[in-house]
Image (cartoon, rainbow, N blue to C red):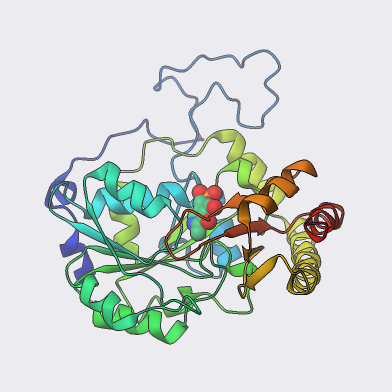
Length: 351
Ligand SMILES: Cc1ncc(COP(=O)(O)O)c(C=O)c1O
């Protein structure tokens, strides 16, 4: 058994999971209180009158193949957001346990912890290059149940050093989970830390179809971890978490042609990111342009409000981070289509 399971909430380890209706497609269903007929106009394959398969096997296998890991190490959920929520619920006792986050970073880690009643230890990324403060992360991790690392990091855009993340895993073995969120990894020239799972039983990796695969609306994220952690989280994920329509759409939209298209679009997006970077670097209204390994750029302007308004006047919304600690006058610009990028850059050039 993975020794990290000893960190889970004792009541969750003892919980008798919800017994959902048996999944046996070889038999006709008269056991789940469903309507026997479809709703008018329901032309899904499975029929929306039926509850979907819990942890649909074909979907889990597709994600396992996509991410190059065994299916037993994958848990699928409604976006990586659900995986973050499940981890915090399974490992943090309300009022007693903590998580570590490294701001500025993705906001939902903190919110999920707070919802669960866990406290949040903040170990800021180092000013300048937003790298990991490894000794401080390890020190804080010894007092926490989960350390959330985001690489490439949202909203700064940079990858975290792989050796530093693995060192954190090693130092915190048996002490805390290290959850590495790779939501933007497809935009970076870096292999996934999933390749190191066998060496680090406390490592958990999050992947999502929301970014590179253009499926944010489908809500499908994959948590990749040791089989024991996956089995534990299966005990607490809501019984029929993934809607049948998502299962069908994701299976149809992650076939070889769609994967080839995604790869081509990533290349286009990276070209556009480089063009935007060069144009922004030449603008007088730009104070600092942060390195990005993701599908967005974090830009410090002389006057973020003016830049935000210029975008709005051009019909475009970018994200204001100027209120976030360490990010004065910063906006995060998601790279759009060439036409959208041109419209935004032209508006900013006029500032
Ligand atoms: C770093 C990071 N992790 C997770 C998510 C949530 O992704 P999902 O759509 O898979 O829930 C986001 C969304 O923006 C993100 O930036």
